[in-house]
Structure formats: structure tokens, C-alpha cells
Image (cartoon, rainbow, N blue to C red; front, side):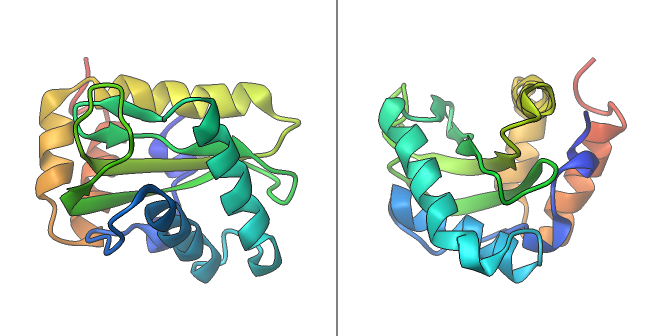
Length: 158
């Protein structure tokens, strides 16, 4: 699965304004609602599901990266977005560092293999330091979209 299969490009946020975990999650979910990828009536329920998942253990995986995700019946296919925080957010990451890169994923509960394939793609790409550095330095949503397209075309990870 590629980023183009689930990332809603019109929801990409190149300069997140939130300064805490819940704020970032709300900001990213709102961007997905505003882009039409999520139903506005389900916004609070989706935020609650993501926060519930965070209580099991932070999705802040280290190196300035977090992958907040959940499954929710209001989506018919995996949807996601990317956000960048220039100042960094305390996301209770495994390494204790602040997070600058956020990859959000929401999938239907009845498609666990698609959810895992999307997470696998995110994880694989995030292992590449150049990919992460380029995303953290991106100045616009268009820049981020271009970097994701390059990743889809295997220009980062071998």
C-alpha cells in the first residue's frame, strides 16, 4: 500500500499550531473532516477512539515521529493525513523527545489487513532518515505531498 492509497492530500498540515497531544489529534482529525474524508458528525467519536488508543501506549515511536491511528466504522477505506509541527509537541514518545512528524491513520474495523499494510508502509518509509529530514523541513502541504509521491515511487527506501 502506498501513501497515495490513503493519505488525503488536501488534509496535509505543514505547520500544526497545537502544542499538546490532544490538540494535534483534534487538528489532524479536523483537517480530514474539512477535506471531506471524514464525516463531521463522527469527529468527536474518532478523536475519542484515537485518544483511547494512545492510553494503551503512546504512538510516539521516537526520533520525532508519531503515528496516531485507530479503527472506526464511519470510514469505508483507510484514510489518513500528515502533519508537521515546527516547534515539536510532547507526545509522550518512547524516547522522551518531542514530535515533529505525525502520520494519522483511520481504518474500517472490518479491514484489518489494509490497516496493517498502511501502517507497514508508514513504518518502512519512516526508517529512512532522509525522508524524515525532508518532511521536517517541508514548508508547505505541496512540499509534503511531493515527498510522499517520491516515497511512493521508491525514491527513498530501497
